[in-house]
Length: 543
Ligand code: GLC
Ligand code: CA
Image (cartoon, rainbow, N blue to C red; front, side):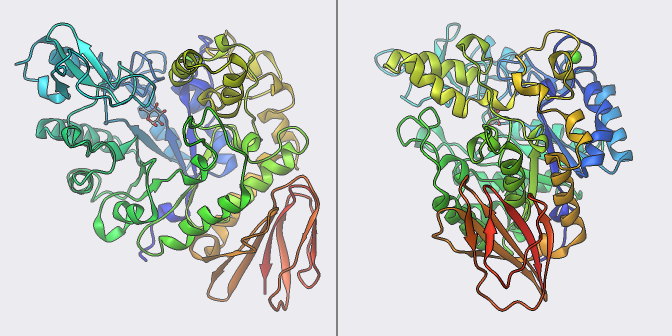
């Protein structure tokens, strides 16, 4: 397969609102990110994925954009973003922007025009339908943020579609004018020297509402091919599509290089495996390691040369991995490192979400009043109305509210974790006095230096980037073990996913072996069974 720079890159996601506040208004901002670039360079990452910083009324923290070609005042200015692109570049880091084009804000000029009348030139930029016979919404389609996906517009008596909040009307991708506006806007950003795009819920843009086709419709891939052609196709950038429903087969449609769509996608099977069939993430299921291994094995072996994996545990929509798949009470540091090792040694491009590299945890907010996320607040209200108790709902929130990832980054042990000199827009996690960047940098055994080492190994060893993946011991209930092989180079990665000791036997002949990394500072001899302590994890080179 043709080699690409992003095959060996590691991406770091910044959620600007919660990263670093440079002016004391309680909201992270672009100057805040610039001031932390040296820190990110020290970690060793190659790319920053910036969650949206565009003009927005912030109904969904910026995923509701009112102007794609301007920056929200609370985050800074266009000059600030240009400075960020340049200063990042000086440190060998590219910036990829979040492309949120399934919908705009209802405060976008296009929607303001569209609402004015049925014959407004912008009317058809959005998706409007007449009420059904009883005067009710045109269909019973539900919003991903709860409630009907249709909102009545009093002026025209028609409904508009919003798959997310009612302040996020869906764009009509069947309208060529919309397509052209979006492509022009993408080129405008590309001309600023960005390194690519992360494409928000991109699998929804091929929807055909009257045929009941929402995600993954037949129009999707032709649209992505024309987007590629009209915008980034001849530029050497990284593009990653967010596709909740992707399967290995559909992933090939997106990321097979010969099809010229996107570099890779985010698939979510390793996340949604812990969700309940009926109540989704609000009623989490117990963790099942065998299932997790099956899923990764399928993706690692399935794409082959017809695509490329992205690798992630966390993002701004998901709980903190150390709280979900690790043990954030008794083995926080060990399990955070173990999870990092397990993921980073796979084939694909790893993504780190801010704070993951110091082992930040979920937040134990006691009151619903502490939450800020629109999805969390909507579902809390609606599930309680359905009969959930407050206590039951809080169990769901502690496990899976998006705010778990959105509390401010912990920089040091001072006031508000060093995030702001003012009052943060959302409370800091009270455990910041133990878990923070300053403490991590001062401790050579910290999660930070473990991640730094994982990133270095990817840079130094082609086997980490291109090696074949083979899962070992698929039915073992505690151990996740696999090998990576490229020509005569071989790595064994073995992780204990439990708080109980266990052992692992590598049953193939071994001439020599060398320990590359261990979260217990151990060295291993593969000629003996390996004794593994709670959450112990190792990378061993096999000769
Ligand atoms: C994506 C984003 C999420 C946002 C939604 C609507 O899933 O990651 O944060 O709420 O799209 O834009
Ligand atoms: Ca600020």
